[in-house]
Length: 490
Image (tube, rainbow, N blue to C red; front, side, top):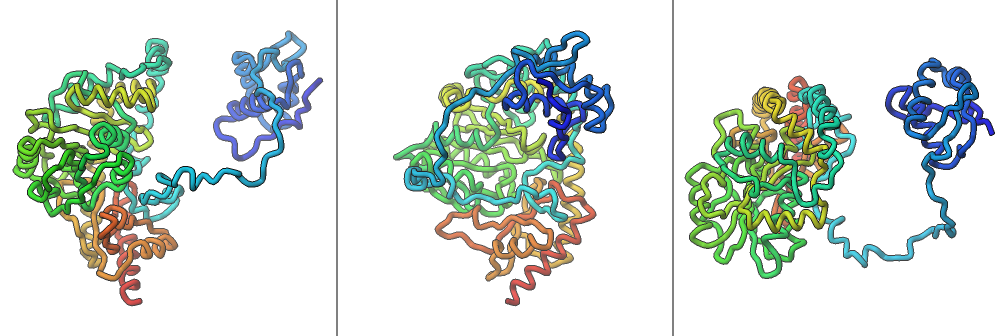
Protein backbone atom coordinates (compact mmCIF):
# COMPACT_ATOMS: atom_id res chain seq x y z
CA UNK A 1 0.00 0.00 0.00
CA UNK A 2 1.35 3.42 -0.93
CA UNK A 3 0.85 6.35 1.42
CA UNK A 4 -0.38 9.44 -0.47
CA UNK A 5 1.46 12.76 0.05
CA UNK A 6 -1.85 14.28 1.18
CA UNK A 7 -1.57 12.22 4.40
CA UNK A 8 1.05 14.74 5.61
CA UNK A 9 0.35 18.28 6.76
CA UNK A 10 2.81 20.71 8.38
CA UNK A 11 0.69 22.15 11.19
CA UNK A 12 1.70 25.41 12.84
CA UNK A 13 1.97 23.75 16.26
CA UNK A 14 5.02 21.75 15.19
CA UNK A 15 8.42 23.14 16.21
CA UNK A 16 11.96 22.74 14.93
CA UNK A 17 13.48 22.85 11.46
CA UNK A 18 11.53 21.70 8.41
CA UNK A 19 13.55 18.48 8.38
CA UNK A 20 12.73 17.83 12.06
CA UNK A 21 9.05 18.59 11.54
CA UNK A 22 8.80 16.16 8.59
CA UNK A 23 10.56 13.52 10.66
CA UNK A 24 8.06 14.10 13.46
CA UNK A 25 5.09 13.75 11.07
CA UNK A 26 6.32 10.40 9.78
CA UNK A 27 7.40 9.02 13.15
CA UNK A 28 4.11 9.94 14.82
CA UNK A 29 2.12 8.38 11.98
CA UNK A 30 4.04 5.12 12.35
CA UNK A 31 3.90 4.98 16.15
CA UNK A 32 0.16 5.73 16.21
CA UNK A 33 -0.46 2.94 13.69
CA UNK A 34 -1.71 5.08 10.80
CA UNK A 35 1.21 3.89 8.67
CA UNK A 36 1.99 0.17 8.90
CA UNK A 37 5.02 -2.00 8.21
CA UNK A 38 5.56 -2.44 4.49
CA UNK A 39 3.64 0.69 3.48
CA UNK A 40 5.44 2.63 0.77
CA UNK A 41 6.26 6.25 1.55
CA UNK A 42 5.59 9.03 -0.97
CA UNK A 43 8.54 9.80 -3.19
CA UNK A 44 10.80 12.55 -1.90
CA UNK A 45 9.94 14.61 -4.96
CA UNK A 46 6.17 14.13 -4.50
CA UNK A 47 6.17 14.88 -0.75
CA UNK A 48 8.39 17.92 -1.25
CA UNK A 49 6.05 19.32 -3.87
CA UNK A 50 3.01 18.70 -1.64
CA UNK A 51 4.57 20.33 1.43
CA UNK A 52 6.18 23.18 -0.49
CA UNK A 53 9.73 22.38 0.67
CA UNK A 54 12.93 21.43 -1.10
CA UNK A 55 13.47 17.81 -2.10
CA UNK A 56 16.76 17.63 -0.18
CA UNK A 57 14.87 18.49 3.05
CA UNK A 58 12.59 15.46 2.59
CA UNK A 59 15.52 13.25 1.56
CA UNK A 60 17.45 14.15 4.72
CA UNK A 61 14.38 13.52 6.87
CA UNK A 62 13.91 10.10 5.25
CA UNK A 63 17.61 9.26 5.78
CA UNK A 64 17.30 10.17 9.45
CA UNK A 65 14.22 7.94 9.77
CA UNK A 66 16.10 5.06 8.14
CA UNK A 67 18.91 5.47 10.66
CA UNK A 68 16.32 5.28 13.45
CA UNK A 69 14.71 2.15 11.90
CA UNK A 70 11.38 3.82 11.22
CA UNK A 71 11.91 3.45 7.46
CA UNK A 72 13.88 1.15 5.22
CA UNK A 73 15.27 1.91 1.77
CA UNK A 74 14.77 -0.61 -1.04
CA UNK A 75 17.21 0.42 -3.73
CA UNK A 76 15.47 2.22 -6.56
CA UNK A 77 12.04 1.18 -5.31
CA UNK A 78 11.89 3.92 -2.66
CA UNK A 79 11.28 4.10 1.07
CA UNK A 80 9.00 1.82 3.10
CA UNK A 81 7.85 1.64 6.70
CA UNK A 82 10.26 -0.69 8.47
CA UNK A 83 9.18 -4.05 9.87
CA UNK A 84 11.06 -3.06 13.06
CA UNK A 85 9.46 0.36 13.48
CA UNK A 86 8.16 1.07 17.03
CA UNK A 87 4.40 0.83 17.52
CA UNK A 88 2.10 1.61 20.38
CA UNK A 89 0.65 -1.56 21.92
CA UNK A 90 -3.01 -2.16 21.17
CA UNK A 91 -5.37 -2.69 24.10
CA UNK A 92 -9.00 -3.51 24.26
CA UNK A 93 -10.67 -0.90 26.43
CA UNK A 94 -14.22 -0.40 27.53
CA UNK A 95 -16.13 2.84 27.12
CA UNK A 96 -14.74 5.67 29.25
CA UNK A 97 -17.07 6.80 32.01
CA UNK A 98 -18.18 10.38 31.64
CA UNK A 99 -17.75 11.09 35.35
CA UNK A 100 -15.01 9.88 37.75
CA UNK A 101 -16.44 7.41 40.22
CA UNK A 102 -13.89 8.09 42.98
CA UNK A 103 -14.09 11.15 45.22
CA UNK A 104 -10.40 11.98 45.21
CA UNK A 105 -10.97 15.22 47.12
CA UNK A 106 -12.22 13.16 50.07
CA UNK A 107 -9.71 10.36 49.56
CA UNK A 108 -6.66 12.66 49.48
CA UNK A 109 -7.93 15.36 51.82
CA UNK A 110 -6.57 17.84 49.24
CA UNK A 111 -3.53 18.28 51.48
CA UNK A 112 -1.30 19.62 48.70
CA UNK A 113 -3.49 21.21 46.03
CA UNK A 114 -5.07 23.63 48.49
CA UNK A 115 -1.76 24.80 49.96
CA UNK A 116 -1.53 28.61 49.90
CA UNK A 117 1.25 29.43 47.44
CA UNK A 118 2.34 32.28 45.22
CA UNK A 119 0.39 32.33 41.98
CA UNK A 120 2.03 33.52 38.77
CA UNK A 121 0.45 33.46 35.31
CA UNK A 122 2.08 30.99 32.94
CA UNK A 123 2.31 33.72 30.29
CA UNK A 124 4.09 36.20 32.57
CA UNK A 125 6.65 36.98 29.86
CA UNK A 126 3.87 38.47 27.70
CA UNK A 127 3.21 41.22 30.27
CA UNK A 128 4.88 44.57 29.72
CA UNK A 129 5.67 45.14 33.42
CA UNK A 130 6.52 41.75 35.03
CA UNK A 131 7.62 42.68 38.56
CA UNK A 132 7.71 39.01 39.54
CA UNK A 133 10.41 37.08 41.32
CA UNK A 134 12.56 34.13 40.33
CA UNK A 135 12.40 34.05 36.52
CA UNK A 136 15.34 34.20 34.15
CA UNK A 137 16.15 37.08 31.82
CA UNK A 138 16.95 35.65 28.39
CA UNK A 139 18.95 38.78 27.50
CA UNK A 140 21.45 38.00 30.28
CA UNK A 141 21.78 34.24 29.91
CA UNK A 142 24.74 32.73 28.04
CA UNK A 143 22.81 30.46 25.66
CA UNK A 144 25.72 29.70 23.36
CA UNK A 145 28.12 28.47 26.03
CA UNK A 146 25.42 26.53 27.89
CA UNK A 147 24.61 24.79 24.61
CA UNK A 148 28.29 23.99 24.02
CA UNK A 149 28.56 22.51 27.52
CA UNK A 150 25.40 20.45 26.94
CA UNK A 151 26.77 19.13 23.64
CA UNK A 152 30.05 18.23 25.30
CA UNK A 153 28.15 16.35 28.01
CA UNK A 154 26.40 14.39 25.23
CA UNK A 155 29.72 13.19 23.80
CA UNK A 156 31.07 9.65 23.93
CA UNK A 157 33.55 10.51 26.69
CA UNK A 158 30.63 11.39 28.97
CA UNK A 159 28.40 8.51 27.91
CA UNK A 160 28.41 7.01 31.43
CA UNK A 161 27.46 10.33 33.03
CA UNK A 162 24.66 10.69 30.49
CA UNK A 163 23.16 7.21 30.69
CA UNK A 164 24.11 5.62 34.00
CA UNK A 165 21.97 5.22 37.07
CA UNK A 166 24.07 6.81 39.81
CA UNK A 167 21.87 5.10 42.42
CA UNK A 168 22.52 7.39 45.40
CA UNK A 169 25.71 9.02 44.09
CA UNK A 170 26.34 12.37 42.35
CA UNK A 171 28.57 13.56 39.53
CA UNK A 172 32.06 13.78 41.06
CA UNK A 173 33.06 16.65 38.72
CA UNK A 174 30.21 18.84 39.96
CA UNK A 175 30.74 17.92 43.60
CA UNK A 176 34.43 18.78 43.28
CA UNK A 177 33.68 22.17 41.74
CA UNK A 178 31.22 23.01 44.51
CA UNK A 179 33.81 21.96 47.11
CA UNK A 180 36.71 23.89 45.63
CA UNK A 181 35.07 26.97 44.14
CA UNK A 182 31.55 27.70 45.41
CA UNK A 183 31.83 26.84 49.11
CA UNK A 184 35.14 28.63 49.83
CA UNK A 185 33.47 31.93 48.83
CA UNK A 186 31.04 31.33 51.67
CA UNK A 187 33.82 30.46 54.11
CA UNK A 188 32.85 26.77 54.07
CA UNK A 189 35.13 23.73 53.92
CA UNK A 190 33.55 20.37 53.14
CA UNK A 191 34.52 16.86 52.14
CA UNK A 192 32.83 15.11 49.21
CA UNK A 193 30.76 13.01 51.62
CA UNK A 194 29.33 16.20 53.14
CA UNK A 195 27.76 17.47 49.90
CA UNK A 196 24.51 16.20 48.37
CA UNK A 197 22.96 17.42 45.12
CA UNK A 198 19.23 18.19 45.10
CA UNK A 199 16.53 19.23 42.65
CA UNK A 200 16.82 22.87 43.68
CA UNK A 201 16.65 24.58 47.08
CA UNK A 202 13.00 23.63 47.61
CA UNK A 203 13.84 19.93 47.31
CA UNK A 204 16.73 20.50 49.73
CA UNK A 205 14.38 22.10 52.25
CA UNK A 206 11.94 19.21 51.84
CA UNK A 207 14.73 16.70 52.52
CA UNK A 208 15.82 18.69 55.59
CA UNK A 209 12.26 18.90 56.86
CA UNK A 210 11.66 15.18 56.41
CA UNK A 211 14.95 14.16 58.04
CA UNK A 212 14.99 16.63 60.94
CA UNK A 213 11.35 17.09 61.92
CA UNK A 214 8.25 15.04 62.61
CA UNK A 215 5.60 14.54 65.29
CA UNK A 216 6.90 15.75 68.62
CA UNK A 217 9.49 18.05 67.02
CA UNK A 218 9.35 21.86 67.01
CA UNK A 219 10.55 23.99 64.08
CA UNK A 220 10.99 27.76 63.81
CA UNK A 221 10.23 29.63 60.58
CA UNK A 222 10.56 33.32 59.82
CA UNK A 223 7.52 35.61 59.71
CA UNK A 224 7.22 36.65 56.95
CA UNK A 225 9.05 33.82 55.24
CA UNK A 226 9.24 31.39 52.35
CA UNK A 227 5.65 30.22 51.67
CA UNK A 228 6.49 26.68 50.52
CA UNK A 229 8.34 25.94 53.75
CA UNK A 230 5.07 26.11 55.67
CA UNK A 231 3.59 23.38 53.45
CA UNK A 232 6.76 21.29 53.63
CA UNK A 233 6.71 21.27 57.43
CA UNK A 234 2.97 20.64 57.58
CA UNK A 235 3.63 17.30 55.87
CA UNK A 236 5.93 16.17 58.68
CA UNK A 237 3.49 16.78 61.55
CA UNK A 238 5.89 18.94 63.55
CA UNK A 239 4.89 21.98 65.60
CA UNK A 240 5.78 25.30 63.95
CA UNK A 241 6.70 28.58 65.68
CA UNK A 242 6.48 31.76 63.58
CA UNK A 243 9.12 34.26 64.73
CA UNK A 244 8.80 37.86 63.53
CA UNK A 245 11.86 39.20 61.72
CA UNK A 246 13.17 42.75 62.11
CA UNK A 247 15.44 44.92 59.98
CA UNK A 248 18.33 42.50 60.67
CA UNK A 249 16.45 39.28 60.01
CA UNK A 250 15.66 36.57 62.56
CA UNK A 251 16.32 37.68 66.20
CA UNK A 252 17.84 34.78 68.22
CA UNK A 253 16.48 36.18 71.49
CA UNK A 254 12.92 35.63 70.22
CA UNK A 255 13.34 31.85 70.00
CA UNK A 256 11.33 29.87 72.54
CA UNK A 257 12.64 26.97 74.60
CA UNK A 258 12.34 23.46 73.24
CA UNK A 259 13.20 24.31 69.63
CA UNK A 260 14.63 21.46 67.51
CA UNK A 261 15.23 23.13 64.13
CA UNK A 262 15.45 26.77 63.00
CA UNK A 263 15.00 27.64 59.30
CA UNK A 264 16.49 30.96 58.23
CA UNK A 265 17.50 32.97 55.14
CA UNK A 266 20.36 34.99 56.61
CA UNK A 267 22.01 36.41 53.48
CA UNK A 268 18.90 37.83 51.83
CA UNK A 269 15.85 37.25 53.96
CA UNK A 270 12.82 36.03 52.05
CA UNK A 271 10.97 38.27 51.28
CA UNK A 272 12.25 41.45 53.01
CA UNK A 273 15.88 41.17 51.74
CA UNK A 274 17.20 41.91 55.25
CA UNK A 275 20.80 40.77 55.70
CA UNK A 276 21.66 39.31 59.10
CA UNK A 277 24.73 41.07 60.61
CA UNK A 278 27.77 39.03 61.60
CA UNK A 279 27.18 39.63 65.34
CA UNK A 280 23.64 38.25 65.10
CA UNK A 281 24.86 35.28 63.07
CA UNK A 282 27.31 34.42 65.82
CA UNK A 283 24.57 34.82 68.43
CA UNK A 284 22.32 32.42 66.51
CA UNK A 285 25.05 29.79 66.15
CA UNK A 286 25.93 30.18 69.86
CA UNK A 287 22.27 29.78 70.77
CA UNK A 288 22.10 26.57 68.75
CA UNK A 289 25.04 25.21 70.72
CA UNK A 290 23.75 26.32 74.13
CA UNK A 291 20.17 25.12 73.53
CA UNK A 292 20.94 22.06 71.37
CA UNK A 293 19.06 22.86 68.17
CA UNK A 294 19.98 22.65 64.47
CA UNK A 295 19.90 25.50 61.92
CA UNK A 296 18.89 25.05 58.29
CA UNK A 297 20.46 27.94 56.37
CA UNK A 298 18.92 28.69 52.99
CA UNK A 299 21.67 30.86 51.47
CA UNK A 300 19.16 32.76 49.41
CA UNK A 301 20.62 34.84 46.53
CA UNK A 302 24.06 35.20 48.10
CA UNK A 303 25.53 35.64 44.59
CA UNK A 304 23.48 38.81 44.07
CA UNK A 305 25.28 40.91 46.70
CA UNK A 306 26.31 43.97 44.72
CA UNK A 307 25.80 46.92 47.09
CA UNK A 308 28.49 45.75 49.53
CA UNK A 309 30.61 42.63 50.07
CA UNK A 310 28.66 39.50 50.99
CA UNK A 311 28.88 38.29 54.59
CA UNK A 312 30.20 34.78 55.35
CA UNK A 313 27.59 32.07 55.68
CA UNK A 314 26.26 30.89 59.02
CA UNK A 315 27.81 27.53 58.13
CA UNK A 316 31.27 29.14 58.16
CA UNK A 317 30.78 30.00 61.86
CA UNK A 318 29.66 26.49 62.76
CA UNK A 319 32.16 24.44 64.79
CA UNK A 320 29.82 21.70 65.99
CA UNK A 321 28.02 20.55 62.83
CA UNK A 322 24.80 22.32 63.78
CA UNK A 323 24.22 24.18 60.50
CA UNK A 324 22.68 22.47 57.47
CA UNK A 325 23.59 24.64 54.48
CA UNK A 326 21.33 24.86 51.39
CA UNK A 327 22.53 26.38 48.12
CA UNK A 328 21.05 26.52 44.64
CA UNK A 329 21.90 27.33 41.03
CA UNK A 330 18.26 27.98 40.15
CA UNK A 331 18.47 31.76 40.58
CA UNK A 332 22.05 32.28 39.39
CA UNK A 333 21.86 30.10 36.24
CA UNK A 334 18.14 29.63 35.47
CA UNK A 335 15.11 28.38 37.44
CA UNK A 336 14.32 25.48 35.13
CA UNK A 337 17.71 23.93 35.91
CA UNK A 338 16.34 22.68 39.27
CA UNK A 339 19.78 21.98 40.70
CA UNK A 340 20.83 22.73 44.27
CA UNK A 341 22.93 21.21 47.02
CA UNK A 342 23.11 20.54 50.75
CA UNK A 343 26.28 20.81 52.81
CA UNK A 344 26.11 19.11 56.21
CA UNK A 345 27.83 16.56 58.45
CA UNK A 346 28.00 13.06 56.98
CA UNK A 347 25.47 11.74 59.51
CA UNK A 348 22.80 14.05 58.08
CA UNK A 349 23.88 13.57 54.46
CA UNK A 350 23.63 9.79 54.86
CA UNK A 351 19.97 10.01 55.82
CA UNK A 352 19.13 12.68 53.24
CA UNK A 353 20.89 10.69 50.51
CA UNK A 354 18.90 7.56 51.38
CA UNK A 355 15.63 9.52 51.32
CA UNK A 356 16.52 11.15 48.01
CA UNK A 357 17.26 7.72 46.54
CA UNK A 358 13.80 6.52 47.58
CA UNK A 359 11.98 9.46 46.01
CA UNK A 360 13.86 10.64 42.92
CA UNK A 361 17.11 8.64 42.87
CA UNK A 362 19.32 11.58 41.83
CA UNK A 363 19.23 14.67 39.60
CA UNK A 364 19.66 13.77 35.89
CA UNK A 365 23.27 12.90 35.08
CA UNK A 366 23.37 14.95 31.89
CA UNK A 367 22.20 18.07 33.74
CA UNK A 368 24.84 17.51 36.43
CA UNK A 369 27.65 17.09 33.89
CA UNK A 370 26.50 20.08 31.79
CA UNK A 371 26.46 22.27 34.91
CA UNK A 372 29.90 20.97 35.90
CA UNK A 373 31.34 22.05 32.55
CA UNK A 374 29.52 25.40 32.62
CA UNK A 375 30.95 26.16 36.05
CA UNK A 376 34.46 24.82 35.53
CA UNK A 377 34.99 26.67 32.22
CA UNK A 378 34.28 30.04 33.85
CA UNK A 379 30.91 30.68 32.20
CA UNK A 380 29.11 30.71 35.55
CA UNK A 381 31.33 33.47 36.92
CA UNK A 382 30.78 35.60 33.83
CA UNK A 383 27.00 35.04 34.02
CA UNK A 384 26.80 35.98 37.71
CA UNK A 385 28.87 39.12 37.09
CA UNK A 386 26.61 40.12 34.18
CA UNK A 387 23.51 39.57 36.31
CA UNK A 388 24.93 41.56 39.23
CA UNK A 389 25.67 44.55 37.01
CA UNK A 390 22.23 44.44 35.39
CA UNK A 391 20.43 43.96 38.72
CA UNK A 392 22.32 46.86 40.25
CA UNK A 393 21.20 49.18 37.45
CA UNK A 394 17.62 47.98 37.75
CA UNK A 395 17.59 48.29 41.53
CA UNK A 396 18.82 51.88 41.39
CA UNK A 397 16.29 52.76 38.68
CA UNK A 398 13.54 51.15 40.70
CA UNK A 399 14.53 52.90 43.92
CA UNK A 400 14.45 56.28 42.14
CA UNK A 401 11.08 55.52 40.51
CA UNK A 402 9.50 54.39 43.80
CA UNK A 403 10.76 57.44 45.64
CA UNK A 404 9.35 59.71 42.93
CA UNK A 405 6.02 57.88 43.02
CA UNK A 406 5.80 57.95 46.81
CA UNK A 407 5.71 54.16 47.29
CA UNK A 408 6.72 52.76 50.69
CA UNK A 409 9.58 50.27 50.88
CA UNK A 410 9.10 47.97 53.88
CA UNK A 411 12.31 45.98 53.48
CA UNK A 412 15.03 48.36 52.33
CA UNK A 413 17.78 46.43 54.09
CA UNK A 414 20.18 44.03 52.44
CA UNK A 415 23.15 44.13 50.11
CA UNK A 416 21.49 43.32 46.79
CA UNK A 417 19.08 40.58 45.77
CA UNK A 418 16.50 40.91 43.01
CA UNK A 419 13.41 42.38 44.67
CA UNK A 420 11.92 44.97 47.04
CA UNK A 421 9.52 44.22 49.89
CA UNK A 422 6.79 46.86 49.84
CA UNK A 423 3.97 48.12 52.06
CA UNK A 424 0.77 49.67 50.71
CA UNK A 425 -1.33 51.91 53.00
CA UNK A 426 -3.49 50.21 55.60
CA UNK A 427 -6.78 49.13 54.10
CA UNK A 428 -5.32 48.31 50.66
CA UNK A 429 -5.71 44.61 49.86
CA UNK A 430 -2.79 43.78 47.57
CA UNK A 431 -4.51 40.68 46.19
CA UNK A 432 -7.25 42.93 44.83
CA UNK A 433 -4.57 45.41 43.75
CA UNK A 434 -2.73 42.64 41.85
CA UNK A 435 -5.91 41.74 39.95
CA UNK A 436 -6.49 45.36 39.00
CA UNK A 437 -2.91 45.79 37.81
CA UNK A 438 -3.02 42.51 35.88
CA UNK A 439 -5.52 44.13 33.51
CA UNK A 440 -3.02 46.94 32.89
CA UNK A 441 -0.15 44.60 32.00
CA UNK A 442 1.49 44.88 35.43
CA UNK A 443 2.38 41.85 37.58
CA UNK A 444 3.12 42.16 41.31
CA UNK A 445 3.22 39.55 44.08
CA UNK A 446 0.74 40.00 46.97
CA UNK A 447 2.39 39.45 50.35
CA UNK A 448 -0.24 37.64 52.42
CA UNK A 449 1.10 34.14 51.63
CA UNK A 450 4.48 34.97 53.19
CA UNK A 451 2.98 35.45 56.67
CA UNK A 452 1.70 33.30 59.52
CA UNK A 453 -1.87 32.56 58.34
CA UNK A 454 -3.25 33.34 61.78
CA UNK A 455 -2.12 36.97 61.62
CA UNK A 456 -1.37 37.80 58.01
CA UNK A 457 -1.66 41.46 56.96
CA UNK A 458 -2.99 42.08 53.48
CA UNK A 459 -1.23 45.31 52.52
CA UNK A 460 2.28 43.97 51.72
CA UNK A 461 3.60 43.02 48.31
CA UNK A 462 6.84 42.17 46.53
CA UNK A 463 8.29 43.85 43.44
CA UNK A 464 11.12 42.02 41.66
CA UNK A 465 13.38 43.34 38.93
CA UNK A 466 15.04 40.17 37.62
CA UNK A 467 13.26 40.24 34.24
CA UNK A 468 11.89 43.75 33.62
CA UNK A 469 14.02 46.02 31.38
CA UNK A 470 15.32 49.25 32.93
CA UNK A 471 13.42 51.34 30.42
CA UNK A 472 10.02 50.05 31.57
CA UNK A 473 10.55 50.30 35.33
CA UNK A 474 9.49 53.92 35.89
CA UNK A 475 6.34 53.57 33.79
CA UNK A 476 5.37 50.37 35.60
CA UNK A 477 5.95 51.94 39.03
CA UNK A 478 3.77 54.89 38.03
CA UNK A 479 0.93 52.50 37.20
CA UNK A 480 1.33 50.74 40.55
CA UNK A 481 1.26 54.05 42.46
CA UNK A 482 -1.87 55.14 40.60
CA UNK A 483 -3.61 51.83 41.32
CA UNK A 484 -2.75 52.11 45.03
CA UNK A 485 -4.08 55.65 45.14
CA UNK A 486 -7.29 54.49 43.46
CA UNK A 487 -7.64 51.60 45.93
CA UNK A 488 -7.23 53.93 48.87
CA UNK A 489 -9.95 56.23 47.60
CA UNK A 490 -12.59 53.49 47.26
